[in-house]
Length: 168
Image (tube, rainbow, N blue to C red; front, side, top):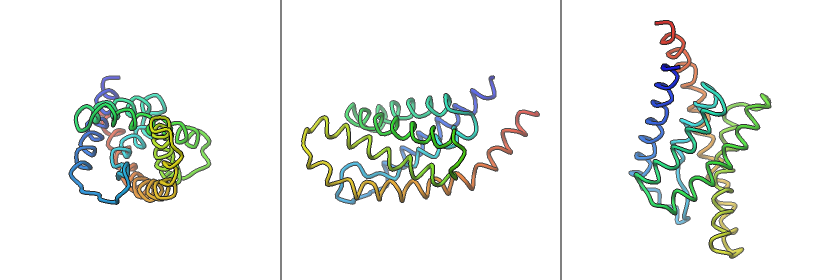
């Protein structure tokens, strides 16, 4: 139990470091809300290394802490809505065991943006917000693909470290 808690702490720290790095990358796409989603790598790793509850915990705590550290209350609301939409679709896809990791990550990236658009619509109350849909879906798919590929490459190494570490 202590070892799992330590690894979960490391995943959360990793997510926060990636969130900070993301704030340093000037991404000027002219569309509000486009981000690389680097911290979602930690969520995907949590899904495959520990399970649904742990991935949900990383998702929620990551959104809250990164918002408090690098943003504001509005960012937290948008981040949480996107993260929860993303978590739900990824949990369903992981449970089905029919999808490869990059496809799951792409779906998570797309649903993250849809979740944020739903909240934006509720706040702004105009259909004009939906003009962003094609661009945000494309951005979510591209970033989700790269996060999924990265997770596919690092997963075997991390599993190996965890298995060896638990035998010490």
